[in-house]
Length: 76
Image 1 (cartoon, rainbow, N blue to C red):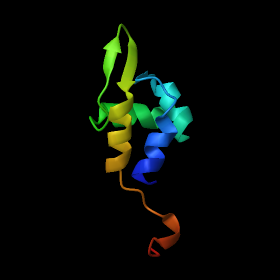
Image 2: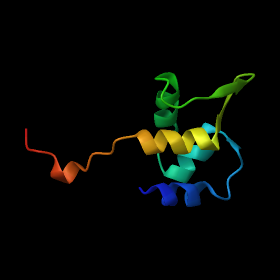
Image 3: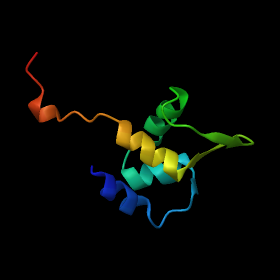
């Protein structure tokens, strides 16, 4: 995904998002988002027991992620 595409994807989103909102936007599971948070790859903060992430941190995390095209993976 290109840098401009990421910004347009989140353009209408609020500055603070829940993991569920992020997962719907990027079409990833919520458990994947929580894994990124627990691994320290996606910064977050808590309000009580609820996690919140900043939009700019989500964009930064996605920019840094390495995506592998499984069709080009060498055979085992």
